[in-house]
Length: 116
Image 1: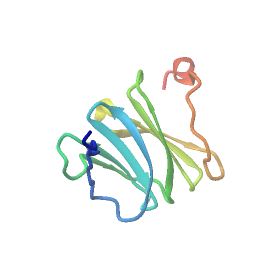
Image 2: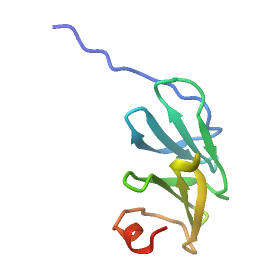
Image 3: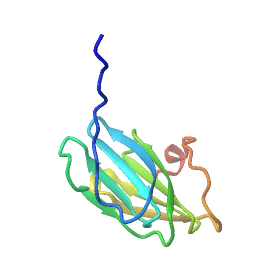
């Protein structure tokens, strides 16, 4: 039986280590890292990132995609969570200040309550 090869894809764009990946949909992923950015990739294009999201002042360590809302949250060592809107080319809708390094992002349905 022949050994099945794994598909590989190299995405070039971050200027420092990548710390996390988040699946957006069947052809789109987000990445974040030490370079303080979040990058959006269309993996079917296999080229450069389609969007570079800037604004964090330190390493971006966490990503969480809220599929139903079309929102991407990024958490950083700078103590902020930024909310990016997929429908508006990933513009930053909100900056939430935690006061210290953001260590966890999780969805608990607050979007429905506060209507961000």
